Image (cartoon, rainbow, N blue to C red; front, side, top):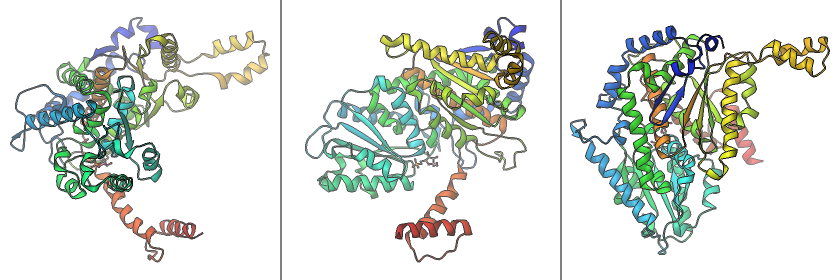
Length: 524
Ligand code: F6P
């Protein structure tokens, strides 16, 4: 609050624009001195060199010796870009052409099921980056959806996720997309097998399965082994990480859901943010400023998490996607060189839809005894112009929550209010400590005119690059995910123990106890 009193034009000094977004970062515990120190830290840790390495296809994923070229997927450059001696531009172009062809056939009602009826429902079977990115885009751009096509997602191995969707479908007009970079993810392969059995049980001749199944994968042999027609397999590449892959053929359900032209607009928005990230000076570079603010709170103010408050119903699953993007990238404790970090790295990402959060967790934000930095994400105009007046109230709530976090409410003001309500001094004294709102709680506001394919694309790219900036400062590799392997291995073993009641109790006491309970429940 004091910083605002010292600088009447603080908003102008601590806000910037890029790719259709305005970042107001004036409500932070930040003055020019601390900002300069953070910028110096970014410079010292080599942000410009590593940013160049990222875009140029150097093996920035050093533990897998791979590039991370999600930016190439949305580039319009015709300059050759080599990976392992091969120019990847033609591969990217050909995958996009294939996406367009499939969209033309499905939207033109020329892709027919086994009984000769056009496709009406597309079902994406995938998890993690093969699910969260496409889902957030489909949900966020619902106002742009194609009239005659519904997009569904099956991700979890919980039969409920599978059956809730299958029960909505007509097998004659359903097109399944098996989306899996490895084609080895247990949840996805189990669900894909179930969907194949389902559609055959519903009368689809096995010889017609190619009319109802596509695959998107880097593991073509396994997709062919599953029974996917090679012509119906779209490529994924090792130089694109799963959580960065919605711009690739993993985005096929997006293009089918909102149309190829809107998918291209999504790519264009991300491209504009890429260009900003590459060209803007560090002090006016949106991903750099957002990344450094995260470092500031994580490493200098003992913050433990970072909240995303999305004041848009359509952005209701944005947090889910950013959780994987951020936490699977920066949830590491080892540097790129293999040494242990002696400082904190990736933060816990949480959040949700505003105004709903105001009636759920904002109490802690306002009066908790730990400060939790948050981003308010706001579209100024509703896609429903006829209800812009109601949307104005949504925007007012976002702005007021942001102001309340910064300004708080002083004891003098509270005492005056309670006295005006007729409370006795002793009552006021007793109630006062419970009503004080401390304020000085850091928060950013990201504003755009309206949530459309272009602004969504640039928003998603903004957070991708924010994560990258933080990985550079922390000295970690954001593009591998070795930590998820153990759980997968153990689930195979414990799956066997749960399957066989006579299996040896060869696990730890807790796990043996849990397995015993499973068997006794199954038998009861
Ligand atoms: O969570 C681990 C992970 O490998 C993610 O990185 C990935 O997005 C997800 O599983 C799905 O992997 P795949 O696309 O290979 O099925």
